Amino acid sequence: GKLTDIRYVSNLTIDWNHISEVMERLTDRNEYKAVGLLNFQDSDIDTWKEMLPSPEHIVLELDSVPKHVTWETLYPEWIDEEEENEVPSCPSLPSIQVPGNARMDFIAVKLPCNKAGKWSRDIARLHLQLAAARLVASMKGSYDVHLLLVTECFPVPNLFRCKELVARSGNAWLYKPNLNTIREKVQLPVGSCELALPLNPKAHLSSGDAHREAMQLFCTQHNFMSVEQLQQHRVSECLVQLVIWSFLSMIQFLSITERVLRLQVGNSIQSKESGTQKAEPEAYNEWNYSKFRLWQLTDYDKIIFIDADMLILRNIDFLFGLPEISAIGNNATLFNSGVMVVEPSNCTFQLLMDHIHEIESYNGGDQGYLNEIFTWWHRIPKRMNFLKHYWPGDEPEKKEMKTRLFGADPPVLYVLHYLGQKP
Image (cartoon, rainbow, N blue to C red):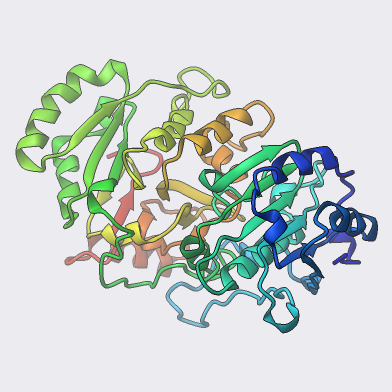
């Protein structure tokens, strides 16, 4: 159906040749019982009926998000994780109304893409995609459901994964979502307005084969890393690997360290070299775009990335149960990339590389860029990446609280992040 709220309007002129091209991949389309259509103009719906004459055409209805709900509502800078004064909660986003619980084999959605504005943080655009994902997830049984997104801008990459992209032609993106995966994703909070993980997780919520999970340490300077620090990774209790990401200039140093590690924790080392084309030479983030190589580590289904200036104080294996991208908040609506969960995929790596010259990073490095790609991220407690820093505005009580946390024995914090000056 056509939403009248101007925020949902797409001015895209559909190229039906592109639609026809991807639809050719649906060899059983003449057997479809019903198709769902969302956010199309009346003339578009007439064309759909000509293109797919056999199935029933269900014009889907969706109420718009109230105008007082903004992106900052979904992604607040701070929430009361400790629940000292309130229990954080996200607003409820309307769901698609389906008449009679009809079974749909194919769902098509037209998305707005305002490239003159912040299209990747457009609440109407996110709402349409989440509503479509919920609809796919609600389909009963195990039969295939295909989803077509008609959009000039790329869809949310960690909601509709590129490995599930059947075909793309121009602005037509045809997906065959994994139903189990999409059902898990729609259970997540709609934004960082709630924690995606309990404050005190009890167990390792493994996503699958532990041999296909890895903790990954990123290091650019040998003085960032010591054997003592690397031994901190023994806090891990499952059979995940530790991958140390380094550069050619450090291979001699790592060859010595590797022998110690293999004797003590039995881990693996990979060396890569790739720097950002945007940061200034010798800048602190000169090598940060190298983190994109994470997505090429396809021997693993899931990776917990850890910056080298971290101390792991408690077991964090439970993070493997979380999806891409899970991280703590940084400032404004952004996440901190010091500890994050990623799911390697060559096509995601290609997505990152394809837009490197058009998407601006606010800090010239990986964190800013990744925040523009993965705007739909999932908040983990700040104890998982606690910044060891006293801010100028900290009240005495806050400084005292931080000092107490830093020295707690047994530890309360999971990971301590030595941002800025290193000890």
